[in-house]
Amino acid sequence: MKKILSVFGLAISLVSYGQNEEDVLRYSYQQLSGTPRSLGMGGSMGALGADLSAIHSNPAGLAMYRSNYYLAGIGFQNRKTESSYIAQGGLDRNQNFNIPNLGIVFTQLSMEKGKQATSGIVNVQVAFSMNRTNNFNQHFRFSALNESSSILDYFGERAYGYTTSELSSDLQSVPGQAWNTYLINEDPNNPNTYYANLPNQITMLQDAVVTRSGRQQDFNAAFALNISHRLYLGMSLRLNTLKFSETFHWEEATVDQSIAKQNMSYEFKYNTQGSGYSARLGALLRINDFVRLGLAWQSPVTYQLNDEYSSSMSSNNFNPGQSYSYQSDPGQFNYNLRIPGRVDGNIAIILPKIASLSFDLEQVRHQDGRLSSPQYGFGPENTQVSTLLKTSYNYRIGAEFLAGPMRYRVGYARYENPLKSDYSANLNLDTYYYTAGLGYLGRSGFYCDAALVLQQNQSLFTPYTLAPGGRTYYSAVNKNLATRVVLGIGARF
Image (cartoon, rainbow, N blue to C red):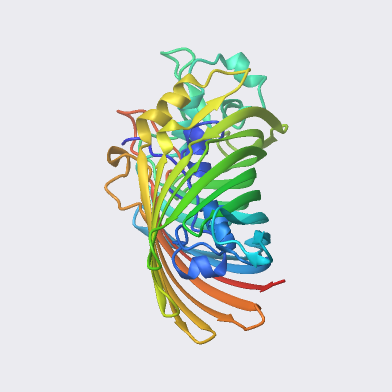
């Protein structure tokens, strides 16, 4: 079985916790985000402008504002995960409230002889915002009888090359904990080679619980200008922040009633946080009153990250009549992670005072992500990034209909699977968004928007991998359904 990655719920192996290709994919993949107006239109606001979502899509759109504006939003997400592992099912949910975006735009109009200028630089905008680009909150579990392999097989492979004396004195690593809890034995015919402390014919009851939390969000400062109501230019500078936590809890027990019951547990906790800087440049061209074209580029982001991690392991009756339990000391590691930039193309068709239709196409070269550290070269990991990941194309389409002060919106988006087809396990791992929105714009400039976002995708979670030619291991197939409700209020001032 090919090794598959874990991100945003693609797949994961215990082999690859932290500082690897998984990090590149998790943090370079961004969920559909933006203001309630933008979300209601499937996030396709690149060429429309006059919305605070322009700061993180195409900052040139800020130049279409003709007044000062502010926005404050609040969101709620309900996420359901259905897991299938060795033909057994599991269902779990989690909910959370968040602040998806805040922002303010200041507008300066150019004046000529007491009137607003119509040529040259006719207005300038300065804007500030906070935008959440990823929500990592998720909880899922799965359980099944496995007659083919055990996580103890994985522990045995991890211990290869260590001497028994090294393992006996090591309670910090997974191989050392597995040895000291009697979960693995040394092969008497092959020194420094280990195998699971289980009979050849096994049936293990396996149970996994995965809990994730965290977010990615940007703090933006932007500048835009309007040239003769024809060409619009913009730039945003960003502080990119992230925080991610995952707890993986695994239990196994023998079910053969002819022998004394054996059971074990393993838990791995992993926390990452850090920040980086990036910039986004954008341009819009107003062809006429009905058509606008846009182009935007976001620079790569180099995060400075700190990982903290720990593991614990316990066993009962693998050494007959004895129980053992060990907890590692917390470890940490500092490194840099560069995630790739993005290029966006935008088009909008506008029927003044009636409706608008917009389309965005985004390119992300995930294979350009890189890890680096003075302490470690990351050669194999960066090779994996180039081997497993590809360029993905994400598209968003939306429409807005005007009826007096009311706005009605619909949208759709598809974010392409970043894994090359050879590593997608013949599953469709694209992510789909279906959106709808409602807005009210008063004469005073007060507005209120609401959006509903339905997100669907499949993912894989591989709790452990084994070397080719050994026992068979399995992946859980997750069907993920997330529902978001986002509300926002703002006003002209």
